[in-house]
Image (cartoon, rainbow, N blue to C red; front, side, top):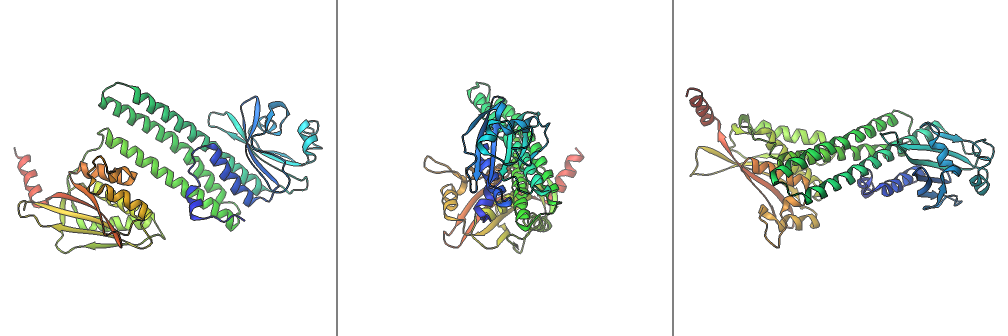
Length: 425
């Protein structure tokens, strides 16, 4: 039985390379199937290389082992037209009885699933070996099939990341104008984002199919982990594309009248839906807030949601508070100065140091701007800048951390009058 810690859950679905993904997949499968040997192998058309392996009792396979293409079980899987290869007894099957590997391993049961990339390329296999008496079930095949699909998508993502790095290197070496480079980068990120979304959608579909089968409670928990990781990655890709779009100047600010308090209540409700069962959010709307203001309600909502997300991920245990107050300004009575704040139990110490080093988003040679420590904060900073506001952080370093931003919003009456004047010009 594998104990799944919070740290382990956070890691599942996010890998630096295929080796790391294969190691996690084998760890999961070894907890679900009580077989002796599980391994992931790559195939380059000439050699099968054992990428990662697990042996429960007998050591049948070792990481790093290489077998010529013509004399390995994995190659037989690749020839099986993409279908699982199930051999009840390798010493009896006509496919394997005469192979040298059978003489070395003896009589075994073998199941192999191909790892097929979207272009049809046979990348490798995920396989299990045991005694011939091992009872192969439909659940075993479905589990291995889901993991093979998952590994195929990880390989695709790794290739995509490599392509992105190469594209970034080309951009760094380019002497094109800054504005043109920004547009090229934005297009590349948009293309890569769509490439990432496509395999992740496939993973989500496979997860849904697996959840419709008869699964144990432990299996359900693993599938839930995969589903959560997929959703997180899709949200991350969306954020990256949004940031790129803002970098290239593809986002404009709207000015329309909206009711302020209902907009804040919508943020609280939306956060509750996205984080069901998580932290609660309390709304603290100060007396004297204007009923209607003129601004961009969508972007204000996005900033508040991202600040709540950031606080939820990095603060200590406890509920959050979304606060809004109107600041007095006798010099500019024709507008509303609204300060918004997300108040959280003290941000964890390592995150707090980054935040406070860049407090006020004023960077010098010795400080790190807060918006460079988090994608949520980076996007929030961009949005607030577009709305010509200010964003900063405050903390007493003992109890609470506040993520704040202030906007100047037009009064509804003045805006309506100005629009009428403009209409009759």
